[in-house]
Image 1 (cartoon, rainbow over the protein chains, first blue to last red):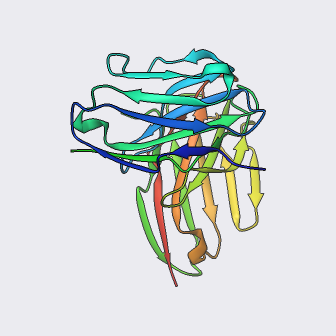
Image 2 (cartoon, one colour):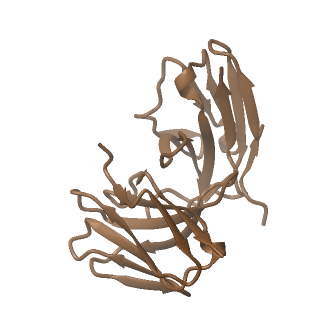
Image 3 (cartoon, rainbow over the protein chains, first blue to last red):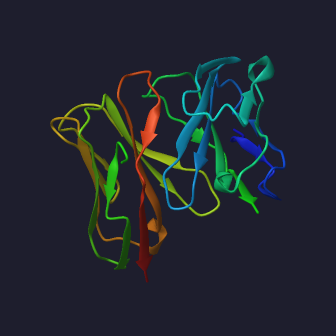
Length: 115
Length: 111
């Protein structure tokens, strides 16, 4: 079974530029998550989708971050404009359905460096 | 202040030693999970505990959920270099709720 795919793996941009990350979850997984992991910290949930609807985006900085999951499969996370403090690894995860007892499967992440 | 505090933050030990990692909170969790993350990869689930006082074993790893469901521990017996990695605990305040991760414990096991 293929795992969660993310691209690109690395991205370096200058502050105020825009960037987009792509995630393809495990086939059949209804729930998709985007996390931000700053160096030395644990992942922080940015947004959770159930199919193509948003379940929780309370920690998403909506003035600069946006995410969508068209057709309930792939998802993109965009930052516009980027700030220095956005430098982090952005992890995508998926699970069969929502619920804390469900195992979340993580992708390898995209490491973003903002200069 | 993080909802879940992990200690220690860093641990460097020799192969064959035992160690315990702690995950503490003032909140009660409906469930708690432990993940291991290696450099350049995403976290991988090790175990989920849901009942207060529950103990689960995974080979040389023993996980315990506190009686009050506010804390958890991970004990590794006879650590090996392959155990090196970032250990993360993550809790859910309610079933169906999102996970909150602790800051992690970075373990290095030297041969």
